[in-house]
Length: 158
Image (cartoon, rainbow, N blue to C red; front, side, top):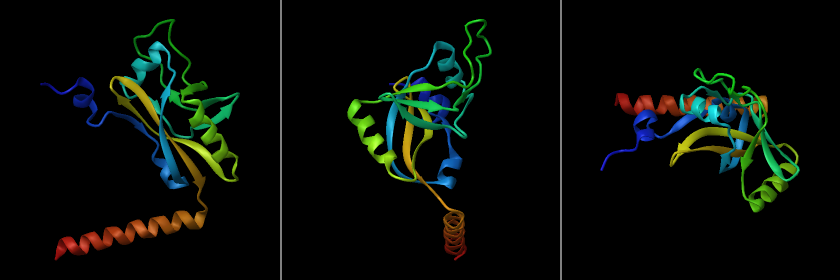
């Protein structure tokens, strides 16, 4: 009958994106993970006061932990407010964690959060397995993007 409230507020439900990840890393694979948050963190996320810049994930003691994700304190939260930057547990199945740990053991691979979004009222994180780009790779990507843009402009003009 009517569209859900989350869809009306932010279109596709995306709360935050890590745009720099696509510039600095070559994304090999990605998967969806839940994230364990406290009450005021959820409210801050729904208000889009989250930053994924410089955040990364590590596998420790059979758990995947997300570091350096900044969730600003909730404006109406008093003494129950959370700390903005703390390690947060990602909710994954054991098989998924084992698969990720095997991939990360290879040289040069890292776990990078790509985006934070709402899915059926729950906050989810898209976690990517990435390999770092060199300076030359970054330049090559920028050249390809510029060439594609030039071609699209030429087609549009004609």
